Image 1: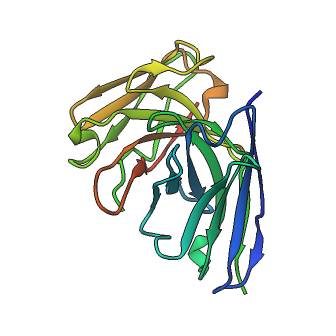
Image 2 (image 1 turned 30 degrees about the horizontal axis):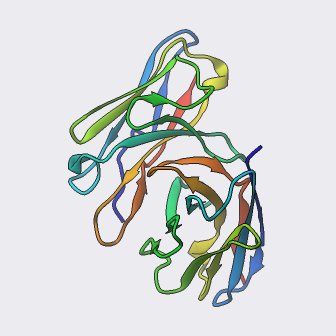
Image 3 (image 1 turned 90 degrees about the vertical axis):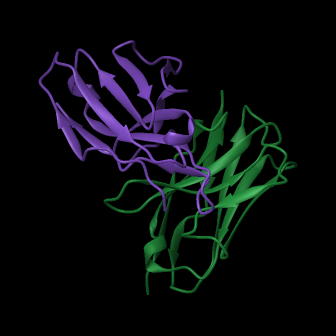
Amino acid sequence: EVQLVQSGGGLVRPGGSLTLSCAASGISVSDDGFVWVRQAPGKGLEWVAAITSSGRYTYYAISIKGRSTVSRDIAKNSLSLRLSSLRAEDTAVYFCARDVGNYFDFWGQGTLLTVSS
Amino acid sequence: QSVLTQPPSVSGAPGQRVTISCTGTRSNLGEGYDVHWYRKFPGTAPKVLIFGNNNRHSGVPDRFSGSRSGSSASLAITGLQAEDEGEYYCQSYDSSLNAHYVFGTGTKVIV
C-alpha cells in the first residue's frame, strides 16, 4: 500500500524557519517526481514546489522562491520542504504528493503550518 | 501567478448533471498541456478524478467525465449524489517563468 505520511507542521513566528517532512512507503522517492501543494485557510489549492525523479531539478512558485528548498533523502525514502523567512501568508495546510506525469496521484494527509507572533 | 479560472460554485439536484468549466491561458491549456481534475473534502487531501483530459483514475465512477477544447476544459458529473458535494479543482502544467504547475481557482459543488 502506498502511503505518504507527513510531519513537521506547527506554530512559527514571522521570520522563522521550518522543515516539513513526507515519509514514503510502498513507493521509492528515487523513482518519481514529487510536489508540495498548500491550501491557505478559506483559499484554493496552490502548487508551491516540485522535485524531479532524478532529484536534479527543483522548481518553486514565486510565492516561496528564494526562501525555500525542496529535497529528498533516498536512504530514508522521504522528502522535505524547508521554508524560511516565514510570513503570515505562508499559513496553510501543506500537502506532499507524487507526480506521475504532470498530475498527482498519491497525497500525504497534510500538515498545518501557522505563522503568527 | 498563473491560474486556471473556474466558477466559484455550481449546484444541482440529486440525479441531475452539472458541469464545471476550467479556462486556461496561452502558457498552460492554450499551449496544449493536459488538464487534470481533483476533488477535495474539508480536512482531507485532494484525490485525482480525471487525468490527461478525459481518463478516469482508478476507482472513479463513470459518472465523472472530462473533456477539453483548446484553452478550456470541463468536468461533468452525471447522476449527482449528495456525496459529490465538495470542492473541485482543475490542474495543468504551466510553461511561464514563474510557474511549473497551476491549479484552478476551485469550484464548490452544491447538491
